[in-house]
Image 1 (cartoon, rainbow, N blue to C red):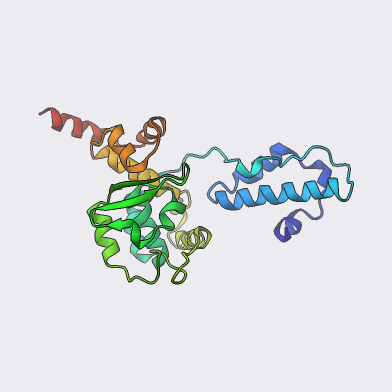
Image 2 (image 1 turned 60 degrees about the horizontal axis):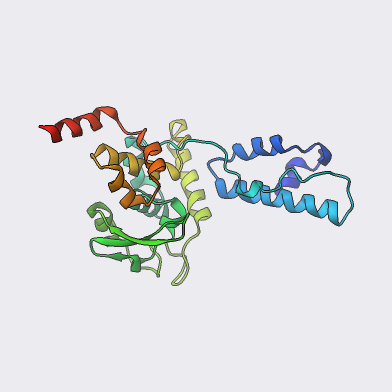
Length: 242
């Protein structure tokens, strides 16, 4: 509320429109949780002003916008940015390896526990559907996790029983991204999930194989597959034919 007051306190509240709110949220597309919180706060303030203060404001322009997601296509990280990961803070490095290795949404990956890894398999939570499922743990991720000290139940541990939150990791990521220059600005933690799917596609995986890793719908796999390199895909196909 303080942030909203600081930026909008001198403006006429009755002129607030839904398109203007959506445009403001779109500017925070790389911080979806922050955008959702802003929309929720505006909605609460609007309801309070009309119901408790009897201000003649009209319909709430922020109604249901907390679930609004601006249309934005996340870009897969380029190779140079992945190569720069050793310069990132430890929590960002761990988060990046988990997202890339599991193909899951950043928040689900960041909240993974040591107990979810069992040798060459891992238990992953589909954050959207809430389901737990067993999948193969790739050697690259398995070997990375083996190097980590166990500081608590979670791989990114705040203390013995709690994980470091998504917001803290995302904030550290954005601070590190600044050090990489303007070329890094378009990329987000979500882009690592897309990179995981692109890498699977370029390795010649079928849609069903990719779904077994990410638990996404066939439509979403097809959508993400569009980012795969056609030359690499065609080589994999021709190699199998020969």
